[in-house]
Image (cartoon, rainbow, N blue to C red; front, side, top):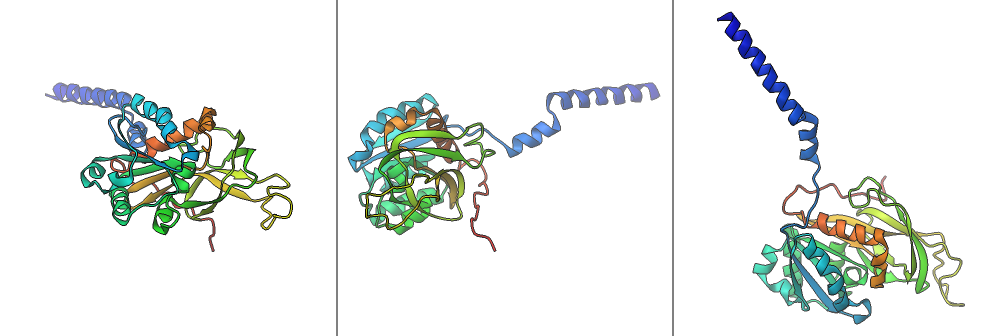
Amino acid sequence: MKMLSLNCLSFSILIFFTLISLYPIDAISQNEKEYTPSLKGKNVIYVYGGWKGHHPSESVDLMVPKLKAEGAHVKVFDTLSVYSDEKIMAETDLIIQVWTMGKITKDQFKGLQDAVMNGTGFAGWHGGMGDAFRDNLKFQFMVGGQFAFHPGGKIDHSIKIVDKEDPITRGIEDFDLKKTEQYYMLIDPNIKVLAISEFVREKYEKPGKQENKITGSTMPVVWKKNFGKGRIFYSSIGHNLTDFDVPEVMKMQMRGFRWAAEGKYHPAENAISPVYVP
């Protein structure tokens, strides 16, 4: 009987260490904390329109194939009325909006806001999200910023990654952009900023129009935040669609889409990062 008990104990120890080798405790704990955001199987609506100077229709040909290649189920709309469709919005994991300026009705905005509050992600770039619906302050509050100006027009400037630990920017180094707009924005000071640009040129305005000398200032370019249960991702890069030819730009944008699409499936991250603290 004693020998049998020892054999049973030895067998139990063997099983225990076998399981540990296959499923390390640290790895299990780590997997619970971290995951890899994915668009596979996600329902995405792509809404485009508004001012044509930001090439909304052309952006469909650029982005939608990439979304589908990652396994997303994509529906494309050239109208804001989809935001009022309760069934579609309830089924959507991610809304990508490419709609500069224009107006959104009360019912359309309510549909958009309710969906995001309930966990649908909202993501975009440049004026398609950061300069939409200029008369809707609640929309700007949801996004976390609003376009104010692009000093100097289309200029060369650099992007500096300020958060190199976030999965959206991890492994991405600082990079340069050529002949495109450097957005100056009104910003929520509590968003989690991932990248910035610096205004380093001596002159950004025509002679006699230097009312606000901005040389030496910096501006958030890429950020993330929460809105209700939903995740918001925004990048101000992308006045020209050729900006996405820069590998770092496309990589951050796609990672942002993936992250924003996970709001219904993973706990909210702490994306509050106040600039001004007592």
